[in-house]
Length: 107
Image 1 (cartoon, rainbow, N blue to C red):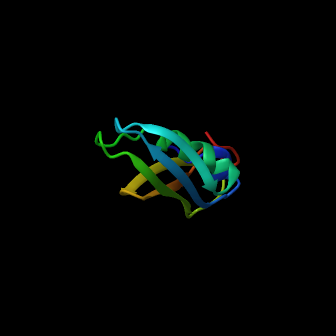
Image 2: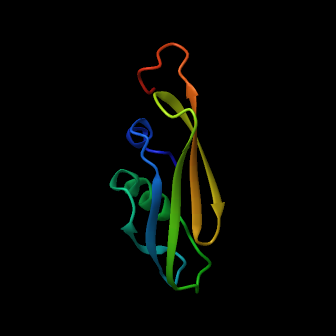
């Protein structure tokens, strides 16, 4: 999963809660954001829709994606790391590195 470059440049951080409905076949039937910064929601939902569960585990689950920026904050190329503390929490942290040639634009 990638930290949205617009959100990173604007230094937007926060938690996005996605409500998942899990079908009897283990697939995600629906993924709906219940809270979180709008610019971070699309990535969280797209990632959650890729999950699969063991068939027969039909039910509902709220997953919290925590988007955090690590220093330095502004105008750097983002290298994104995703860690999972399953089943209900995902942390997305971006380690921003200085752009050697031009520090005023994201690549």
